[in-house]
Image (tube, rainbow, N blue to C red; front, side, top):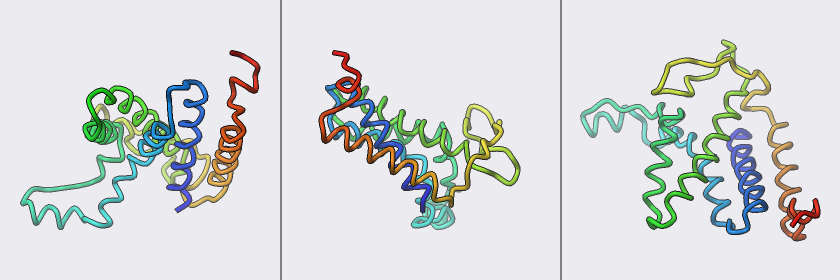
Amino acid sequence: MPDLLTHVLVGYVIGMLLSFRDESLRPAHVTLVTIGALSPDFVKLQLVLPGGLVASTLGVPVTWSPLHTVGGSALVVGLGSLLLAPAYRKQAIALFAIGAVSHHVLDVLLLTPTGYAYAVFWPLTDYRPPAGGLYLSSDRWPVLVAGCCAAVVWALDRRGDGPAEVSGSD
C-alpha cells in the first residue's frame, strides 16, 4: 500500500511545515493534518463492512464511495471535529481539511486508464477533471520522495532548525 503511506508522509510533512511557521502548533496538531490526509481513504471501510451487509442490516442502500470525494471529506472533517472540545474545533477543522485537500491533490495526479480523475468535487458537480497522469497508486517512487521529505523535515525539527531559524528571519 504505497499510496496510503505516501498520504501519511505528505500529511506529516505539511503538518511539520505548518508547525515551523506557527509555533503554537504542537505534535498533536501535526497528527490532525495526518489524519485529515488519511480521511478520504476511510472509503476502505468497505473492506471490513461491505455496503451490502450494512444495507441488509439497516434496510437502506449504503455505499462508502462518497467518502472519497470533497463532500465526503467535508463530512468526515466535520464529524471528526466533534470529537474535540469546542474551543479547538475551528483549528481542528482547518488542519483536518488541509490534510484532506493534500490527499485529493495527490489522487488527482494519478495515472488513470481514461485520462480523467474521479468526481472529486461531488456532490457539487459530477465533473471529472483531467488526471495528472504522474504516477500509479502502486508506484513506490512517490513513497520514496515523500519519505525523504519527511526525513529532512524530521531532522530539521530535531536540530531545532525550522525554516525560520535556517533563513535567519525572526
